[in-house]
Length: 536
Ligand code: NAP
Image (cartoon, rainbow, N blue to C red; front, side, top):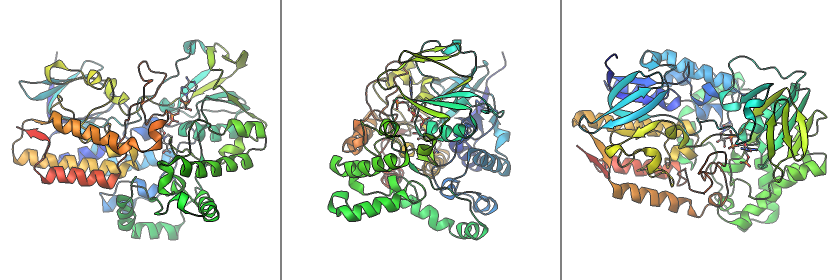
């Protein structure tokens, strides 16, 4: 056996957060090794190559803000860029800062064990290779563990089968094929729109419909490009002031205090605008008051009815068990019109779940369907899944998976009591989980980097939050969410995934108190000498 390699810091994951953290720590003079399971950088944008994958955030609000050179050198071609462009962008950043020289690819971390006497983390990769570092930073992403549905016979299918989250690197052709898509979340909606264009026949299996809203994407012309480049400062300042770090922030008015006529006009305006304005830039009471929420839900239902020709199909596409915006709103381009096409059929499986995948297709509701291809758009083991698939053990051999058995507990979503020297970028209960994510990634990474500056200056060997700080933060997370309607709905926000044993009870995985409040709290903690942490 070769001797484990030694580093100051090991980062797991070379997506947007891991890449930026590497860049910052290298500048501070730390020796860093990033272990990345894929063959390239990009994380989410590396894995999610499914047809139709694209931003729901304005491209220029999504890129990194830390480098003026990157901002000026990179041209986004569309207001909401497609996945191949985003992956090119992240490769451009990796090239520019020579990030790959400290990243080991095809290196999936299997175990991370804390050595109490040495105050260090021992890492083992799936291939048995070992490494050691004083500090471990997880940059594993909140939506990085694809989950196949719990349906018998999945292995039996003889045709092509893909999960959207592990889509092949080679082109997939739908022409002359009978295709099934299972799942109608944000991923399913984007996939369906695209597959319907060329498939001979598409059958969509829908368990729960979502309220979708138009993306209104368009190309960026030269004049707009110049304007964007001249106003990056304002763009990022605006994001940083808003609750979810988007270019859209809640309207100061309340739905129920606005006349029905003005309300309707406002909804119409938001429905006609690009991006998340209809969700993030809506009346603030739609998230907390069922009566207010009903007004926007009714508006979107009306739109669905107007766009889908067959009234029976339209009714199937309308959610019955939750209100608008209480689950992630998929943004779409002609999604509802897909169901007006002759080559598309919607199968509602709410009351008749898929019984089995067969060698030639699937059986459902007493009928057998034959397919050439099945696409699983069935989502992820959200937020904690990326942690659970690594055997992470802290003090006294405690497993992180066990500690989080009844839901995650963290301090600031950045550290866990009992797991010294481990920092969790975009971890559970971190504002980055409910955010225009790169904006919050930059906040996370910059805060952690300041901590590492402090660690170097004060020769800190060990950092761990107190149990009291962790308890208080966890309580605050639940308090901040308690009034929100989305805590009353099953979704990945509330930790529900019935394809996974034990994930059938609602908890809360995000931090919904808002990015500005979170940033302020993190800054206060640092200003008070890292209050709530014990540094040795
Ligand atoms: P998801 O929202 O969890 O949706 C999974 C879908 O699969 C749901 O419709 C679910 O039905 C269905 N499903 C799961 N198991 C099933 C089963 N056994 N039988 C039938 N149907 C089943 O996952 P996602 O669509 O991949 O999206 C996850 C998140 O990724 C989004 O919320 C978003 O935050 C992010 N995302 C972002 C973008 C973007 O920014 N452009 C694009 C795509 C995704 P139920 O609803 O009934 O469980």
